[in-house]
Every structure is written in structure tokens, then in C-alpha cells.
Amino acid sequence: MRMSRRSRTLLSLSLNFFALFFSITAFITTYWCVGTQRVPKPKCSKLRTHQCIDYGVNETDPNKVVYSWETGDDRFLFRQFHTGIWISCEENIHDESERCRSFIDLAPASEKGMLWLSLVSEMLYIILLVVGFSLMCLELVHTSNVIDGLKLNAFAAIFTVLSGLLGMVAHVMYTQVFQVTVSLGPPDWRPYNWDYGWSFCMAWASFTCCMGASVTTLNSYTKTVIEFRHKRKTFEQSIREEDAREAFGYFREHSVHSISKSVDYYSSQTIKSGRKTPIPGDSLDFSDIANSLGEEQC
Image (cartoon, rainbow, N blue to C red; front, side):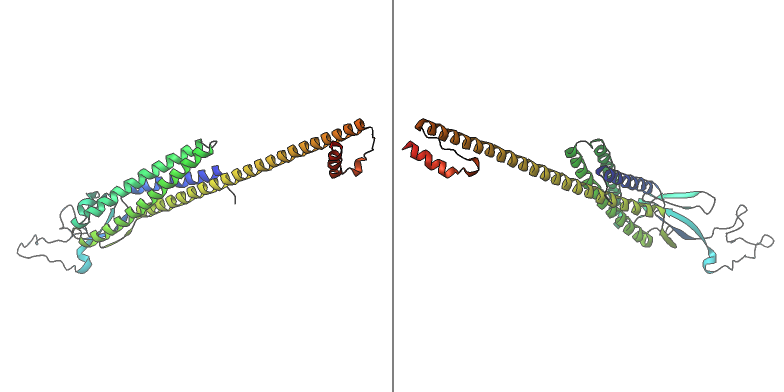
């Protein structure tokens, strides 16, 4: 299907917009990774009588200790947690609220540098997406000027490709940091089981849209350049053909004019010498005219 230059620009702009929307949403949400954490059941109290372990004594006989026969996983609670690129939140087992902590503080010391690099790459990814989106909007305004449109298209493609590479690096580094934190993080945070959440899926969906926008932008730039060169070549060829026709007409007119002058000169010389030789138009030979002119001059 053949698409116009404006249609290709609108397609690139739409993909860039979705990439920007998905990346910002993933960056500010805390559902990159979700799962459960296994924590010991708290001690029972008057306010909490279930999902707890009673370590108290018998109220009727203080000397009799009450034992709990719960073993294995029955001694633990499984609370939900969700982690983003900035913050990790888990359920509070004492009430219905959540407790949130900075994921930077949870990461091992050996991985903090990579985590900061991932955060910086993620922010640069969003910034370059904004720059590419702005250049594509400007390209729609300069549709009448092909040269300005090509320059904007080229810069938009460059910024979009660079943003996609930074986004991919940021996502991969965060994944590595999280996997190390699962093994070496604080004991009270380590997940019992976990999986990637919808924020993580949106981050990679943003990268996919970004790559689609960059490919579409490069394709639009290449097609525009090829069409422009083809039109220029066709124009130059038509100019050359027009010049050739004009040159052919010019030489033809001057050739006929020279022949007419030669014929008039021969006729005048014949009249002066007193001879009248009919010259039929269909048997006129220019070589004979030249020989006759030479004899008359002698």
C-alpha cells in the first residue's frame, strides 16, 4: 500500500506518542514486578485473633504454657508486594495499609551503581522521546518545504533511535538489578515468588512503539529522498531534451537560411551573365550549386 509523506509522518507521530505515554506510565508506577513475601505470623492479641500465633499462657493456670502446633508454611503469612523502578510497597500485616520503601535502599551495595545508571537511562529515554515527538510535530507544519521537512525528519529519526537504545539498556539493567536484589536483598523483603507486572509490560511496549516509530521515520526519510532525486532527475532530463529540441530547431533554421542565400546568389550571378537556366526545385543539387558558383567566380 502506497502512503503519502504526510501519512507516514502521522504514523510515526502516533507510534512516538504511544511510546512516550507507555514510558511515562511505567516510570511513575510501581508494578514492574509483583509477587508474595513470606513473613512469620504475628502474635495474637485482643485486636487480632486470626492469622496469628498465640504464644500466651493459660489465663486460668499461668503455669500452663499454650503451644502452637502449626508447622511448615502454616506458621507464615503471604503478603502481596509490588515494586517499581523507584519504590517497593508491600502489605502491612497489622492493618489494611501498605508500607513502601525506596528500592534504591533495598538494592545491594554492589548493584546501586547499575540501578542509578538504569534510572538515568530511563529519564534520558523519556527526554529523547519528547524531543523526537516535538520534531515530528514541526515536520507536519513544514510540509510545504521539502528540504526543511527532510532535515526535521532526519533529526527525529536519530533521536528516536537513540531513545530506543537507551530504553532497552535501562530495562535490561533494571531486570538484572531486581534479580540480584531478590537473592541478596534484605531478608524481610525477599520475595517468596514473583513475576513481572503490567508496568514492566508497558515499558517494553513503549520500547516496541519507539522502534516502530524510528523505523517508520527512517523509511519516510528514505522514500522522500528517493522521490526527490527521481523528480530532480526527471526534471533535468526534460530540460536536456528541451534544450536539444531548441538547438535542433535553431540549426535547422540557420541551415535553410544559408541555403536560401546561396540560391539567391547563384540566381543573381546567372542574370548578370545573361544566361537563364531554369533550376527545378526537385532536382536541385547543392554540390552542383557550389561548383557553378566556383566556375562563375573564375
